[in-house]
Length: 198
Image 1 (cartoon, helix red, strand yellow):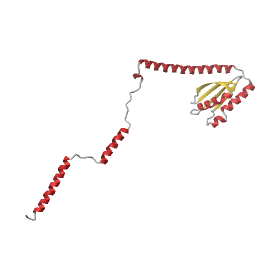
Image 2 (cartoon, one colour; image 1 turned 45 degrees about the vertical axis):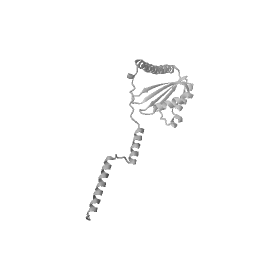
Image 3 (cartoon, rainbow, N blue to C red; image 1 turned 135 degrees about the vertical axis):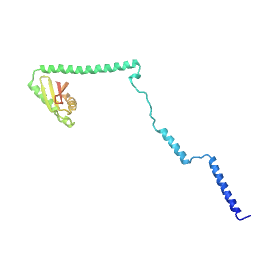
Image 4 (cartoon, rainbow, N blue to C red; image 1 turned 90 degrees about the vertical axis):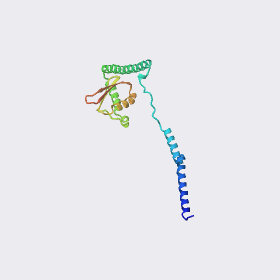
């Protein structure tokens, strides 16, 4: 036996082992690593937890029965009539009490005292402390039992805030009040308040 025989035999053995290893890897299914398996499971869990877009049927009167549509239309119509009736009632109340105010004769002593009281409320510290802007122009005129307060406000000023503050405070001086709002040519607002004095 020559000295080259063991070397050749060893080379053949190594080649056979390599070939067997390659064939084994090709036939054996690949198993994912443990880390990959965990990542996939985490991804599936997150996907399950994520919110999905829910398609809801559109809500419209077209989807309602004719009876339901008629009922809704009736409710809307009734509320509109009630709102208009309240506005008309307030307008009639103001007109009525303003006619009574215009017909009264002035009691100079009583009127002067009541005018000072109402002006003190309209321009008082309570409204200023609340951060309410005073009227740009304020006029108070009383007769025998009724008084008219006229307050003009510039455009963009707090006329509504002033009216709320005044009406909340005037209860000590009058039993009831009627308000009329008028737009001024300058873009401002005029509030005319006729009060039944106490």
